[in-house]
Length: 506
Image (cartoon, rainbow, N blue to C red; front, side, top):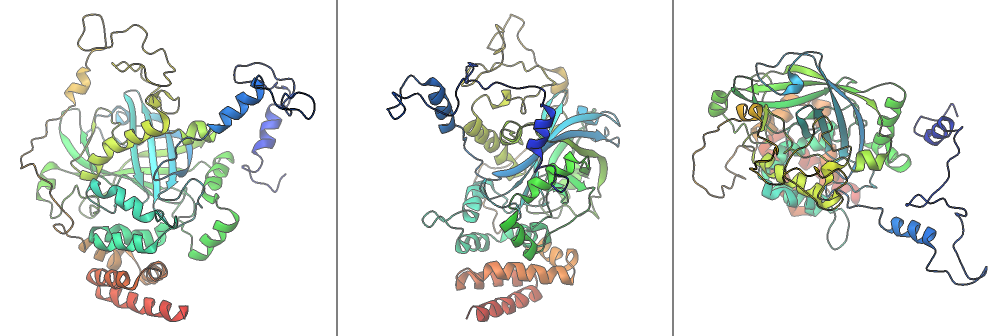
């Protein structure tokens, strides 16, 4: 077995660990089973009996063992570990996990592929999810990010259409290049993220060798009540590695679960992956004077103007004991904050604050926060929520289920109140369309000109042209027009690549 990896030897390890204990199989009610491979019948060839609870118990549960998969980021890998604060940032943030250097906070992390279904390959060109759950002594903080510092759209009303355009055609049930390029080219704000998607970072070498980003702006509150806008960065300590197109295709055919396997094996071998956490900080006055909308998630904050400030380190040192229990049921929501961390006015973030929790209630049930992997176990939850499907804790016993009350029910937190900020807002209520009112090209141009080298530009051209050449001619022309607005050379080279692809087809 020495040539097999730890993931392949999981059952051998289980057998060796529990070899001395012979377990007896039971029904779901705990009753021991004498015969497991035969149902009850009238005679050896006769009809089955309705009284055969052992069979009915098994088959009824089998019929119901799948839960709804996530609409996006369905397939993923997860692991557990800790966050260690390595630098003092209490001048920016009062959150308890940052209150002293060397403090450790338990974490869970989930990595995922954006638009593929649960059985899709890990190495397809997709955005990757990068989510961290911090189990703090003041509750759960969920940082729900990805491996790109920007997103495709700046208004949450477009999020369902963005996902639909990347998934399956409703009639053919096939991925459709026309759907993809129609949406993307009708919304030029997607350009910045789209270039990253088709660059090397669209095919990372597993989950250990990619950076993570919060993407959105958030707000920090320090112990004095001062506020700052921040962005989160998580830099892989393993070094960046990406896969070329040929290697991706090879892995799709012979190891479609490559990224899950890689993460599991690394942790099992004691090669614990880690990421260094940084923040960018923008003062309130800087946000007001910023030359672009700092809450536009399609844009980065230039690091020359807002340098990275070190904060701490994420370390993963434990694999899940059961995938379904601890990864499939692992539920994140950007609305889960702790005192000292708040949302910014970012419109997409504001939309996600509701959408993620609503999705988890659909997938896992009203009481999904009682599932052990989601439970804020370092805090005794005290609120006025009761009952609902699958209430599995004490349901808060006989405590009052209304507020206010005179019978020792939960009280408001003075610390949370002290760190609750007042944000003055003025303006008219209206649906402000922002597709063409913001600058959609400058940062995409910077990415093409300064971030990519010549080889990176060539790979970007090849990756886009191979996909775009499958779309209708008018969509190709519309895409070339947009890419020309990013940079004249970009449009010219793309036209040449599409012409070459067209000739090769014939």
